[in-house]
Length: 379
Image (cartoon, rainbow, N blue to C red; front, side, top):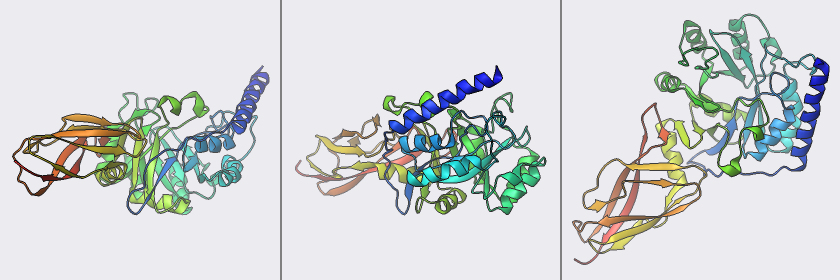
């Protein structure tokens, strides 16, 4: 019966993969680059049949291409392989199988795996390794040292996962301090699938550790997400010089990331602000008008991101909108009133807004500026 059950699983797997191969269509993610860097769309945590996932490795490449991603890491569990009786191969098999297709489809495939231990220390993803097999050892400390020896880095997966943290609150323990002191703990997963861990976000701020968010997908992505209906997998936006393993590694080490979960974005203030300014453009930033009239300009959101705006400071002489939303790919007519108290000469007006869905720290929203050159004429 066990063998028959698995055969049904394999048939379903083959049918799914075949259908995908015949009907692949791509929905690109529109996010403009920021000064000095390309914005790469990345998912660094996913599984295949070589651990507890339910798809073949090449399907992960096809899904990434369909979803408009630039780079992924297949991170199958080292210690947990429930299909190993039927799916043969070492701990590098998924990477080796997917590599050729990743090159053909223009997806950067990062060599990785998941070191899967009870708390402490929990689950750790190793990225940029050369060989996963030596990590299959009893001591997690020796496994960590092997990652370092290979020039890889680590990030801590779902630190507040209820299966390992019954109250859902992540706890930093002595084992994590030891890993941190090795110098290769470069990231923390502040969002896993759809779960956000605010205490982990704060650790990133306090300890200067890179913020990451990933799908941790096990089933086919089509069973979870439908971008045509407005939902997408959680991903990490990486600000890199180019789309290569070396450039992505450098960006993660340097903390150049923003996590995109639903319509919410988490990251360092610098990169959130640069992301906002690259996406949001005022079509006419010089406006000529007479006092006391309504002024209008167009504000364009040249991205697939949403920005929810709330005014932070009143501007003397002008009545700006208290709140508004900049929806993906839309241009809005931005109207505000000149109260008639400004001089008849050119003047730069700065409207300060909180972006209510961009968070540099837990509970702290990004504050940004919209600037307009106002030229008033007449009395």
